[in-house]
Length: 277
Image 1: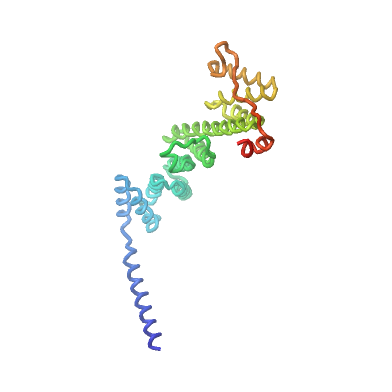
Image 2: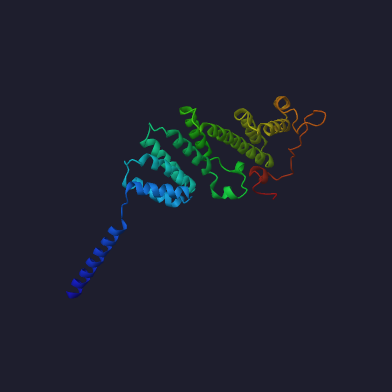
């Protein structure tokens, strides 16, 4: 019985000690202190510390005088910390809580910027990764974010950069289609390659990828003995890219990108993944 009483006494002492320790740990600072600490940390490039103070500011003073600015700063701090999902979530929260804010365009812009970079990841920032070969993923979301910004705030100071990024996204999407077309050509799936090239011409007419897409269109049409399609593709190429490398010195279309190989049936039906390798 004494052992049980002693055990209960020890447990009570430990619980009380833990409670005291917890009370000492949770020391709520004045609102202005959190804000000043966050600003100083951001100015010195310490975005981890800035984020900690901004999170505390939002937790303890959600309706304080620094609340709106703290939410904006949190979007930026998370972005700088490469927490792109967190930055986007903070932008969503700001737009939800402050629908009439004068800084709504900034939140929209930062949301698009986070989406724009979300596909890239840390590796692509420091290593030569072929972006065109990657899945578009969040690029389409970034395009929608920037489009929403331009529709609602066409005169925003962030609008010019948003427009340029939308162009870059379009070019990237076009290059992705070309990457797929090249793959299909390598596997002798010429109908699929033709479809991808045509998609580029029809949907990204101002993209730099159009020239190569037209060449691939002409090549695949000729290979499939579709003379009208090949002739139209060559005429369009000549009109828009008269100095294309596909034309020889006499201005004649010359391209030998498609060369049928002697491949087994297994190699053909598996797009080259099996057989003859």
